Length: 108
Figure 1: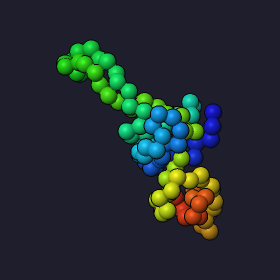
Figure 2: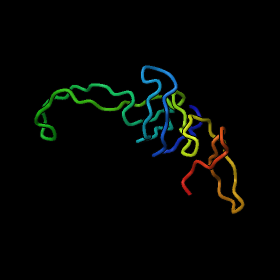
Figure 3: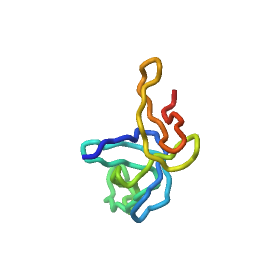
């Protein structure tokens, strides 16, 4: 299990695999498995039978989890995929910083 430095709602860029270069927003984190659900990334076809919830049935397209090591956070200030460092502000709050430009990543 890897340390998760990415939060729900962050913009991330895929750095390896079949979806390399794609960007998307994190929809869900699965920290116990080190996985993320990213919108528009690792889309798979799921075959479903007709049911009361979905009377049509057929082939549904949905995102599957991707490993957190395959994505990097996109800095909102500089727009580059970057690693994340942590720091404390003067008032004692813990924030995430962009390693490339040094700007605060967290929404304050």
